Image (cartoon, rainbow, N blue to C red; front, side, top):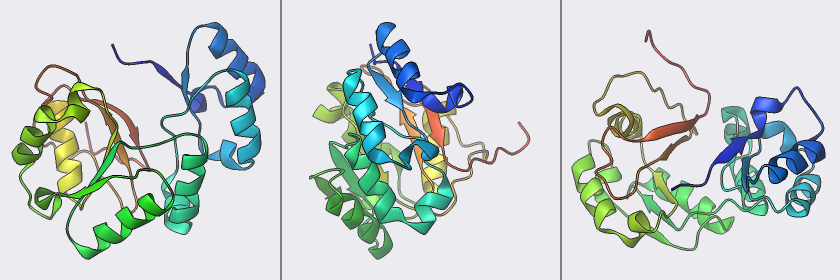
Length: 202
């Protein structure tokens, strides 16, 4: 069963961080998701997490931070323990440049070009690769670097089973999904992060 991670943004109006961390650790939680404001002093965040035996495999980062200082933001994520087992990237130049930044900042040491992450790629080819991979069976953490509207469409297929044109991923945006293990993931994904989201008439 996947570990539960608490989104610290949910209790942003109830400081302080040290008290929250101690409470969460006391409840048996081991994973939290810090948000943008808590990255102002990364050393304090690191210290509080370490003191309470907490890890931060994900983070809640706003799109402006990614646009204004993508490399610096990625470096901060690495400092609190965010890491990908592998980065799959489109072969197009801009995607490769983004992937190079992720590698440079230490968010992963492994990357692979995946042709279907180019525009109009086939999600079924990626799914076949995924379910046959060790990353899937071992609950690995993957990053996909691609293009819009394709990545948004893929996310919708994984969450709802079909495209619905409701998830809008802006430039430098991030969609984070948790996929089930040991079953086909289409329509079974859990969306837990969409930076600068815009939902259209649900």
